[in-house]
Image (tube, rainbow over all chains, first blue to last red; front, side, top):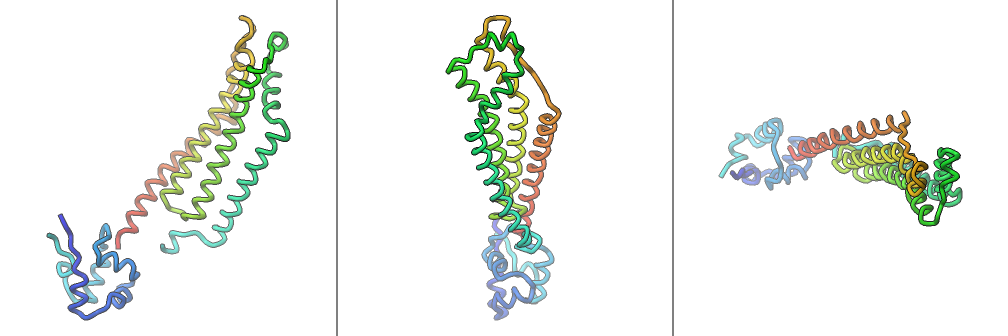
Length: 66
Length: 182
């Protein structure tokens, strides 16, 4: 099971910098960077909801499984 | 690290002061051992526990004296061990902060050190009297078993500290896992 985080793709599509997204959703850039690299154990529904809200997308657009 | 995960500056300062006070205490203990001839005092106290008849029949040859002092030094060694464990807690708290597995391990270590110290203090009279009289003629060898309420309380406190350290270790592991959730 491999979970892939496609946050980079979504940020590129929305032409948004990760710094802006971090500020909008209220987490540190360091944590957002870890999330982008998939180096976290989990994502809270609350964080996922905020990301989807800012990027105007669905959770499936950010997280995928191969 | 959030504000909840760390201590205030004054608490860190107190930790540093306590760490150095522990070191000074340990140094004073060593000085007392050397200057005040602590081992001889411990041996003397146990010598006084022997009956007059046994004292007469007990000869302190140099080999026996070495064994007696070695047993007496266990008392100081456990005190140093306990002091070292206390120093380790303050040091870890100062360097790594609270809610870490390292600090919990230090607390468990202090619990273990307390248990060892209590066991040694319970066994000390038995070992010392045995060391003093083991080569006496039959009938003048003594075996003492004694318990003090202080040593038993110390043992129970050590067990509680050890268990609390184990619980804190699990809590620190959970906190560490939670930190990895974004």
